[in-house]
Length: 280
Image 1: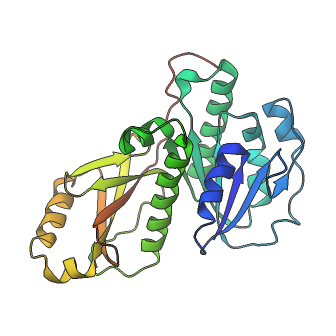
Image 2: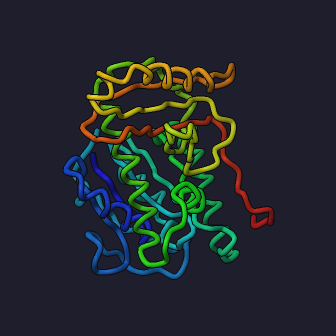
């Protein structure tokens, strides 16, 4: 899988993916530390108008590609041009929403434009999926995070969750009832289920949910010896059943001592801009 980061936030997350051998990573930014350095521009519109042709750098097609971008930065104006150059691939966009209460009016406008366009791209099938992530929601799920290394902690939570979901998607479950996610459900987010406390920690407040999938990772010894585990898992899944939501799950064997569950949910509806001010 190819993972491409655009801008500082996107590049930092992509660098965290590089610890796993399953990913080929590319970073695009205006600084020399990036794999691909582009010219710094003064506005969202200029990044869109002057984004360079990178097709010689991306000599792949019909591949699974993750594009990671934060919408509030000026460089996110290049997102649509980047996606156009990657359109021969199966694209999932990982979209990072910053703390909008601290954003300027210009940043809020940039955020709204990019976030809404990406969701419409997903709904139309121009990209496979857009996964929405909110730094404030991630921090809430993790707990208190020190200033030093703040974004490193959040980025690791994002990358570890995405990676394990990818691993499970490409593994055979020992138990489960996986069903096909609706083709209309292309706007999503990820999260973690605390199995002991039966508490879900989602990375974005997704509304109008249509599909939820739970991926349980359980140590082999627990799978063989814990007689209560089947009931715990199935009872929890049953408790989430809803006529309006398609629920599915899988249980996978791991080598880790601790049992855990990662989850992903989808909506077919565009998620509205959360700020009350009119910035159009």
